[in-house]
Amino acid sequence: MATIDMEQTRNQARALLDSRIDSVTALVKTRQRITELKEELAEAEREDKRAYVRATKDGWSPEELKKLGLESGAAARRRKTSNRATGEGTAAVAKD
Image (cartoon, rainbow, N blue to C red; front, side):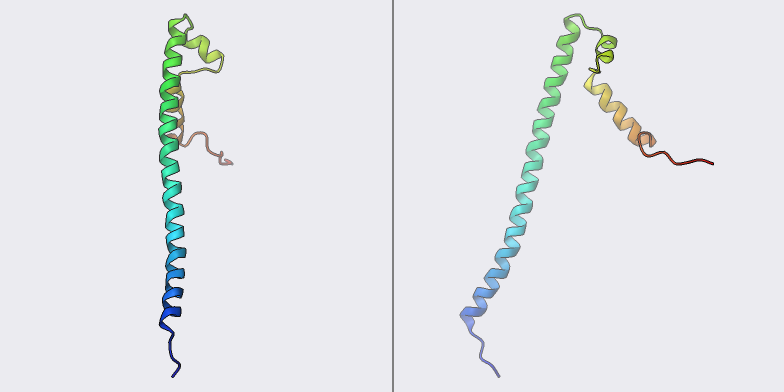
């Protein structure tokens, strides 16, 4: 029966654990980045809402802003969510 080198076995086990720890570390970093980006998006949406309100207070009507492609962010999000719920905006199925 071959003898087992305890130190070599421990080093091999550590190397295996280190590679597993590296993958979990990478996962944690990506999750943290997602959280940061969501927070940045939420702040940008708040700024967008304030800018839209400011534009309407400066005399722009919602209809005028819509014609300029500057519809209210809330209305655009509602429409997008509604389209997903109803299946609109997805690839059309051919009908005979």
